[in-house]
Amino acid sequence: MQQTELKNINVSRFQTLLDSSARTNILDELDLIRTGGYQDKILEARFYYKKDKVRYNQLKKKLPAVTFSAEFKTRRLIPDLQFYSGFLVLDIDNLANNVDINTIKEQLFIHDHVCAVWISPSGVGLKALISTGTPMEYHKYVFNYFVELFKVKHDVVVDVSGSDITRLCFSSFDEKMLLKETFSSFSEDLLVDVNKDIPVSQIGTVVHIDQQALTISEKLLLNDPKGRNSSADRLTMHSILNFLKRRRISITSTYEEWYRIALAIANSFTYDVGVKYFLDLCRLDLENHDEEGSVSMLQYCYIHRRLNGINFGTIVFFAQQKGFQLNYRNSNK
Image (cartoon, rainbow, N blue to C red; front, side, top):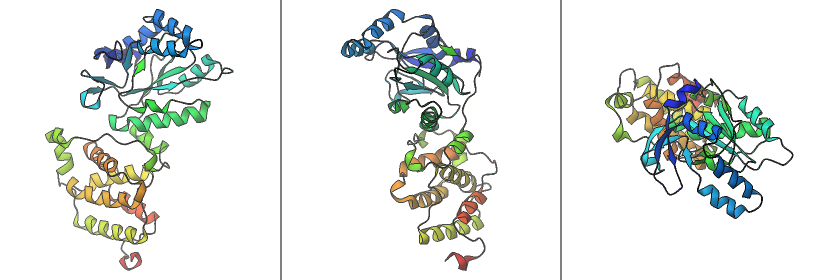
């Protein structure tokens, strides 16, 4: 993506915490931070940061703030969300005194998906703007990935309370902001790789899709029987479920398994059939199972399904990894 394209991505600005939202765009907000649009207010707040934290917090709450992840109608609530931007901000607060903030800023900026890094209102922390390149449903997954990446690669701690799409980012001043001319976006496929061994229970909840709001074409993606609901696949699915249930084995315990099984079901069965199979599989995760999260993940896979090689054979493959034998029913008892 080109830097100039940020001009076309609308987000919401709140002049104070109590104000209603107003439309702005990402590039204009970054320019205000870089050129000193809020310089006087920020410098006053920084003056009090180490002298009087109470006064600092009072001044900080009066700063303009932006929701870089979304544009909202009036209130900063998911029901009021009008547009998901495909960006998120990571807050790195209270860097150690012996750490050079500009060195850390340059290190974070190296990553392909980091499009901007600037000093926070306190003057002792950083903010990094990430291009997620994924739908809203994956916002927290990308957030969690970069939290871990920054910790492992740079030994910096990200404020994990900032994972919500509604998160406010207080404006700042940094004339030496790092801003890429071009940058890469993250992708869903990368998420499968980076999260492949993470238990599903450790990943944030997927945003629920309202079926009442689906378009006709989206409903077809859920319910069109063409090429799906094969009697042979249904028979094999029942054999797999019986095998797994008897042995109390899960094939959806990691993100990779969970995601790929959901895609395979979406490509193999209509939604009314597939949701029953998927939940039967996910419930084998016992206390780690999230019913609502699993339903939302499956709905997402139906709406965005691609005939990309992930099909019923993927389910059979994962089952075989646990000992299931295709065509040998007696061995599966």
